[in-house]
Length: 125
Image (cartoon, rainbow, N blue to C red; front, side):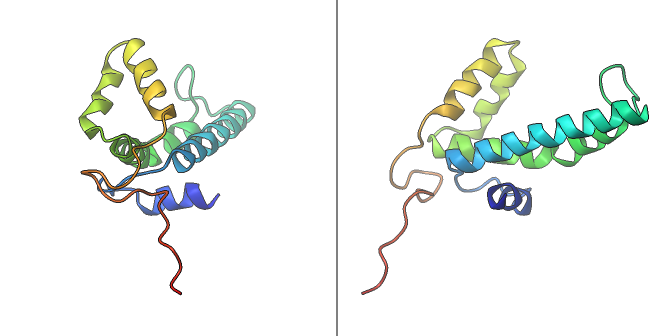
């Protein structure tokens, strides 16, 4: 849950890198919340669109910017520019390519986007 909250706290931060675990926990919790809100929307009859209810729509808008920024930071961890996120505009193949990219381990050590998020300095002696 800390990973999810840390992404929300950095909702507009594009600089830096995001480790794989943080990204996927954020995605998992987003999916769980969306499913729960979808069920609540269906039970309360709050469907404003054919497939989406009012609560789901509001939540989707609320996490749109954090989702984009955490995706850009995840690409930075792979030493790729955030512009790679535009691959999502290619029908099907772009989303699949991004999914595969997000599964890879980030580059070790510092890269042009910042320090390695997995690198923890040795404790002082």
